[in-house]
Length: 286
Image (cartoon, rainbow, N blue to C red):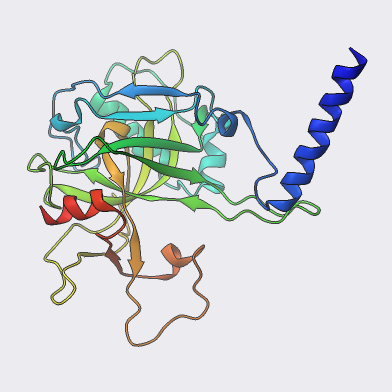
């Protein structure tokens, strides 16, 4: 027993040493440990409906057969709505979730307030197969939603990560092409309380403008963050097609204060990259 305890102490010491060499990775919680132990969930068929303008995202029929991966235990358990508003930036969380529940779960009796607590996750992964069925390669597409972690002692600050995704937005969406999709920025990945029966996680997203014609010369779409009423919504993970990469459109002058951490806040217009991976290229060009 003494030898076992000694080995455990040595393992712990070595783990602390490795953490000191990898800034930002010191705080490892249950969700990080379970990245490869979570549930691999197959999308189930749900009838496509025409949601109100406040929701705008529908559940695509072609999600049948696609899978997503999420940890068994949330990285931010028992998180208050107040924290989601202040730290995650989900400023319209209450009206957005209220609209979702009113439309999809009209009999739900959840009394939403800033004191309501929900299980919140750090990330969700989508398993993407080649659109052209060229081979059996599967791309693990990770979408993150984590707030900034301030500096603590010798542990450096960890910047926020709120990724952007392509969301099924209309009934005219196809297997490929931007028509019927819209870009959204994921601020929160969460589940409803256990007493409310809903099979999938939900995400709070902030909308970007709808796709128009691609820019001539580079053949990429441009989008901008939306403002005002209806700029955010709560949607099911079934509405998410995949992550997407936005490139700031700099114009004639470059903001030298812009970094990889703040570019989504500083820039007013973005190109939607189709060169992130083969799946992105197939999606936008087939």
